[in-house]
Amino acid sequence: MTDRATGTTRRGFVAVCGGGVVAVLGGCAETSSSPPYQDGQLNQTNQTNQTNQTNQTNQTNQTNQTNATERTAQQTTAAEAAAITEPTTNAVPLDSLVLESHEYVLTQGYKGPVVQGTVVNTGSEVVRTVEVRVRVYNATGAQLGLCIARTSDLAAGNAWQFEVILLASPSDIADYEIAVLGVPD
Image (cartoon, rainbow, N blue to C red; front, side, top):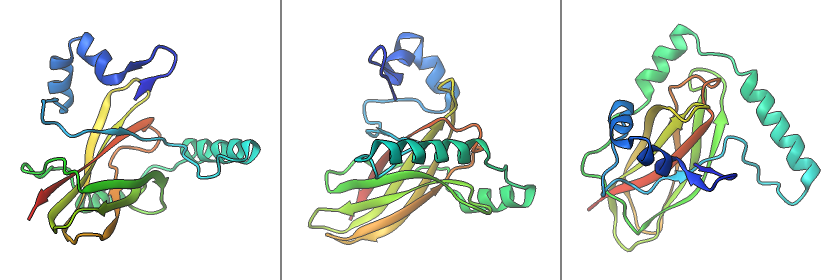
């Protein structure tokens, strides 16, 4: 995430303020081989050509986010059972995997907040494992968790529509970052 007023990135700020300790304590230790994360937007809209319509959509999204109900205990148990939180250790960024789209969506039922989107294998080979990783943050920039969606054997030229279940409370989520990795065949 970039602070538009100062041009400072979250990673730059964390590095200046003792990022090593913060990263290890937050469970997001960065290394030179860490995946390239992209910033996500909670209030994305595909209707940017009409300012009034966009403002109404963003206000609706903000209202939905504010009025989001918390999961029940039973829904939390189901979400925890369905969510993936452990990354594949041998997954790496692959040029053939393209994150075509992604958006934050607040669903009904046990899934609650999710990030949905599409990954395309633009290469000429099957990718054995494809993994989408989403890191979520609160309003102060503290990482709330890492959640993952995974599929196997994505053929060359094929697309995968993914859904990452976020375990954090919708009222706590202020921002997210997303990356796609893979294990070649």
